[in-house]
Length: 233
Image 1: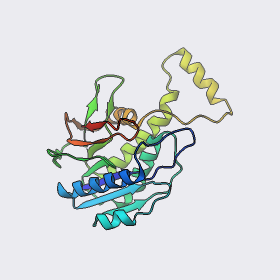
Image 2: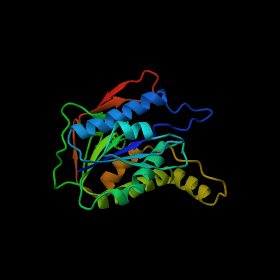
Image 3: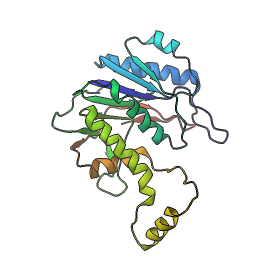
Image 4: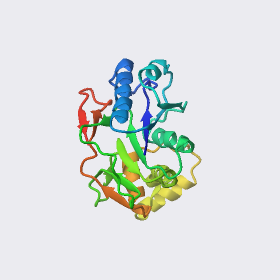
């Protein structure tokens, strides 16, 4: 099994939006802890895929060995879900064939009871919320995938959901709106659909096999909250 860590140690600050309440040093130390914990629980292959605006990886490289670091310079969408998907698609060629994947977001880490076990007969192992409803989401802070072929298809499905969901037709009103926007020459706004929501729709509509786990045993602090709330999932 290979671990893929998606990361943005040094996000580009927008003039009107605070992207993180953690300092650069805090984010760096948290990412180092993530990588070390992955090694401690048994991962031999680890990819850190990072889209930092401007960052020197030398300190991180000296702190953690045997980690493949891929720095991707991306346009920073306001909807970070789009960047997340593009990061993951960009590293597909680095993943060996027929290898299980554990994806985890940077600065989160496996906790004490974390297990690398995954049923060989399923495509995904995830933690879902309200999964039997139209509001279904999955946590994308951590989840397991059977192999990269399935993963690539799934990620493209998620990207399609993010862009197409706002234009779905569910009645006469939405049909009229769709027709007006279809013939409009105006630039469409970036969609606000989250990857958590899009991924749940992709799982349920894409005919994948999956296991819903009550606890994946990962934890970390949310960067977007001033309280720096600890999350355990």
